[in-house]
Length: 428
Image 1 (cartoon, rainbow, N blue to C red):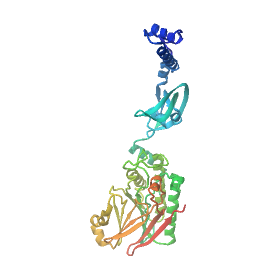
Image 2: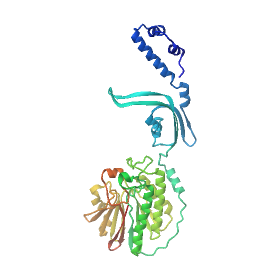
Image 3: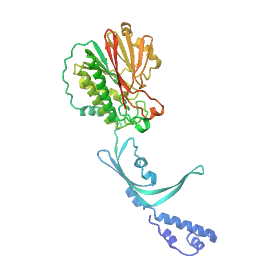
Image 4: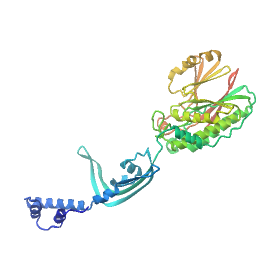
C-alpha cells in the first residue's frame, strides 16, 4: 500500500523520540514513553506499507459468469495454511455452497505479508497462534442440478435406448413366481475398512444381477409352468431421493455417485430385470414406496410404465397407495415397506381387503426396511420381513446392525399355497 506524505515523512524522520512526537503530533511525552510510542508507530507504518494496494484488491474482486452457469471468481483473501489447502473451504469463504456448486479448479498464490492472531475465547487462549497469509485466489465452479423436475426425468427417459420389445407367446401355467428385491439401496457407499464390507454403485449393480440370475436359475431348475411373475419395485431400491444425498424425509446418508447417475443406471437395471423376467412369463410390476426413495422409485416405475404400456406381457400398477395386494387363487399377499404401520400391520389386511380375506386360505405380508429375515403369524396372517443384499454403511455399523445378506423369491400354487422359497445368499 502506498503511504501518504505524512506517513512517509514520519517514517523517514530522525531525531529524539520526544521531539518527533512534538513536531508531528504536538504531544509532550517523557523520553521513555516517547521511545515506545515512536517504535509502535513506525512498526505500524511498515506493516501498512506492505499491505496490497487497495486498487489491486479491487481489481481482483471480480466474478465472471458464463452462459452455462459456471462462474470464475478472483479475489484477495486472508487464509490460514490449513484453509489454503482446502478447496472446499475456499469455496465456502467465497460464498459457494459445495452442495450446490461443483468445483472445477482452485488456484492459490500466497503474497509476502501475514497476520498472526491469538485464538481466544472468554479472555483465555484456546488455540496456538495462527498465522493468516494474504492469498490471491481464482476459483471456477459450475452449478449442480438441485431441482428434481419432470423435465429432467423426461430427459433421462429419452436418453435410454429405444425399446425393442419383442412379442412373446406364453404357455399356460399354474404357479406364480414372486421376486421381491427389497432394500437394495442402490448408490449406498460403504468402506470396507470401516464397515467390514465394501458397497458402491458398481458392486450393487453386479450383485443385483448375480442375485436375480441365481433366483431365476433356481426357478428354471424346478421346471415349473409359471403363469405370471410379481415384481414389486421401490422398497428403498434407491438409497437417496434428491440432489442433497438425503432420503425422502431429509436424512443425509453416504452416497457413491451423483443422483443423476444413480437414477439413470438404476432405471436401466430395472429394465434389464423386467426383460429377464418377461422371457419366462407375463410380469406384473407394482410400485411399493420405501422411506428412502418415495419420489425417485415412483419415477422409475413410471419409466417402466412408459416403456411397456403397449406390451401385452407387462402390466404396471402406478397407484400411490403405500400398500399393495395380490390375490392368486387361495393366496393373498400384501406388500408394504413396513416402516409406518407398526403393530397395525397385523389387522389392516382384513380391513382393506375383507372379501379377499374371506375367500383365501394363505395370507402373508411381505415387508422390507429391517434388512433381515423375520417371520411371525398373528390372527391368520403370516408377517414376513424379507432380507436384503445391501451392505451395512457406517451408520448401521456404528449401531451394530448386522444381518445375513440375502434375497428371497417365492413360488405360489393357486390351490396349495406357497410351495417354494428360494434363497440367494451374498458371499463376500
